[in-house]
Image 1: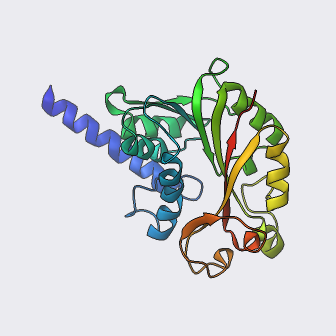
Image 2: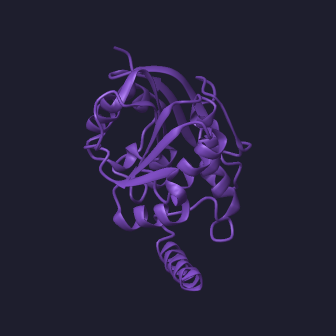
Length: 238
């Protein structure tokens, strides 16, 4: 049985890696730098490293649009004394996440929509949602649904690309819209308190990076146009 299990597990892993390669344009696993550009992997991983600083022992954490699961996995690696769940709308992506990162029942990945999350009100201390809001037609509904499942005083940590791409090349592929600093802060401040806003840059040679070093720095009026992405730390107020 042990040998059979080993070969079945290897066969399944090969199946998921093949699927990941085929869908690399829309799906990525930033922990697999052998399959994706290392600088882009670091760009995605840096957000989860950043979010981990806001999470405390005993917190219940939700990663919305958790994709292939690497983000929730890395958050828990940094914060082992938490409960964390990932929700992703694509069924095959959920299968991948559970197979690669959900072993032992430590992290659960569920199929679900950010517009109809399968949780009771006031469930989570922290919700992360990175590079999601620009893909959703009903962005206001998305924000309201996240806040519904957050506890009072809980944190909503969200990222979205700066709308430089809209000015350079038109709307980004796969995006419903792109946000300027003014647009994303206006949207979020209608529903929650924005505690902090940061620029994130990859340090890459793409024009989107504006020749900035890799890192996450506080957004100011002087540097907001240089952001590759914005990361906003928001709080649900009663």
